[in-house]
Image (tube, rainbow, N blue to C red; front, side, top):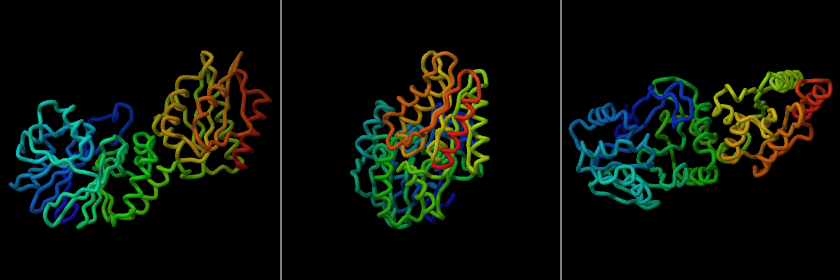
Length: 385
């Protein structure tokens, strides 16, 4: 696929994978993106997952049309992007590998004793001339590994953005960008909002017309939309007004309370209410929506003097990704010693800029008049805030 006259896509689509990185459901597969720049010097940018070496090498061969690559540029050392470095060097042993010092340390860890080719170690802000085209390297540590860098091609005004601006999903499946890019960002990069913001500030200084990430589609139009989404996600700002109800339920009574709260909220005019059963839902989708919307209600049972495991996991997913700037409410259920609200509150103590609702709901085994009234009061507060 031609991206420009001299820049080509040579990546692959993976429809074998069901869990990306062993935890993220990808019903529409994954794309592992790699690119070739044809100039006086030929550069291949990144490799693909190890299981797709033959297809990837065939794609490269078709583009090269008999030429040999001069450079292999490595932006990021995760195996889904760097898994075929050694295989590539077997086929093109005279190629010079170009990356930064931290990446070369990892490279020798992944491929001990296998790489003997020339190397070019680049510095932050350094450049590599290919002829008419050149690449300017910008380090992006912890977006989302410490060795990550991106590169900018000023002639065509293309940003090769590594995992930034990536998304779940193969390129031969049509789907909206926002939802799967949000789930990808929050799940994989979300902890590193400060670092992502720093990269976006550097990118703002560049005249970018095309974004080529290592996952997801090539972005050519309406770049302000994609960059705007990233600015929102990286700053942990509220993306949309709405209320997420995340719950676990052992015998169905907590579920009934959550369903009543959802119905009450809608009756009071709440336009967006999203409900997740944490034992059954896609956890990464629930986490992404907790960051997407402005308010979150956590409802669970006291379980072994703690909280139900799926709720504990959910809150840990939030806090390890620096959950903040949201309104949070608690609903708890317990038959003899309810303390779930206290545990959930303690788990969120390190989260910054949370507004806790004054009203909460305590269910003693099953709904009664008192807990039903508490649901009414909580719904009123959530709709008022």
